[in-house]
Image 1: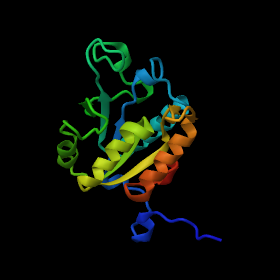
Image 2: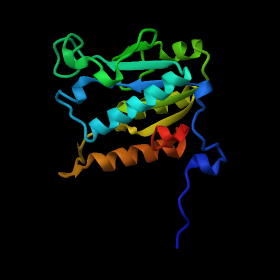
Image 3: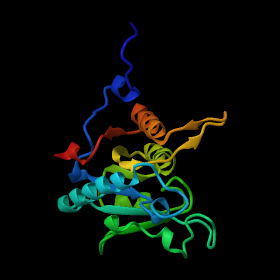
Image 4: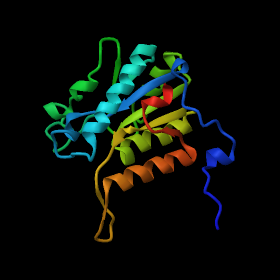
Length: 200
């Protein structure tokens, strides 16, 4: 029988505990109406938004700085039109006064933005990340965070994705893609927790 697989983080003896609320910033990625009412509906989006709202409430209660990331495509374009309503943040996750909103144009929320500098200016040392889509902007941002020196925790239930063609005539179901994306991040890039109860 083969040995139980281990992540690179586990093999290195890295801590498996989630980022402490007292030293972390919350980064919510692309919680936009394009994914609920637009051309990119995500599987399990309703449940993921509800969990993200619980995470957001926990962060606010603990005084964790919140950074709302929004993706803007080309004006008048088919997806994430910055001048259209679908680029807006879904109501349960709407920013409060004093919370930072960062506009990005690439999957990685650090690329071409001042997000890194803003989080450092807030005095935080770690990140808690959730959002949409798991395989795309969440993954890209978390991978880049490692390069920038951040320790990151990803909240699986507060993220979601969609079915994708597999390039061979088949389809990779959203649930499988979501799980595989989280597993890939957990190997080296982040601590992955199920939901906000990790901080209970």
